[in-house]
Image (tube, one colour):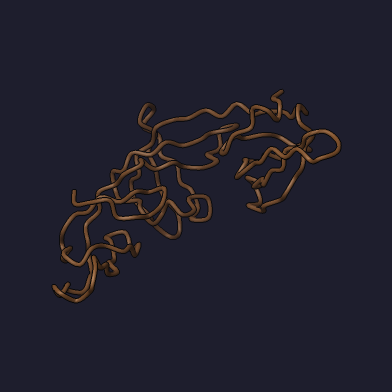
Length: 185
């Protein structure tokens, strides 16, 4: 059991037999009465988001989540295939389960998978990835009054904003948490 005082974003908990992850939480002390903890929870199986309020100090069932390293291999027919780095077993996940991480997944990327009951719940990318620019317009100097940016399509298909001096074929470093250009690789 875990107290509401120990809540943090990304924590997995069990409510009414369903597995949820905490998206965000906020401690709230009204002028009258006891303190409350307001949360936004995502149902892991269904993907739905609910709002739930707990009394401060209330306990809920926490879930032990194992984390393992995997290597991304390839994508085919809407399935993403990964290999366990220790056992060398292959696992495939549907596109829905991979989520927003698919924008920055390229072959041989090392990821961390959260596992519960033998199932992969979610994957976490490294904080920074190096990706090649596949398509962008040529930048023209003197085009803007201050530093400008332009859209660029990465080798994975994601579109990010990059500075005007970046050209096709260059490799750039992207922050996977925000999807923002960080610098040249």
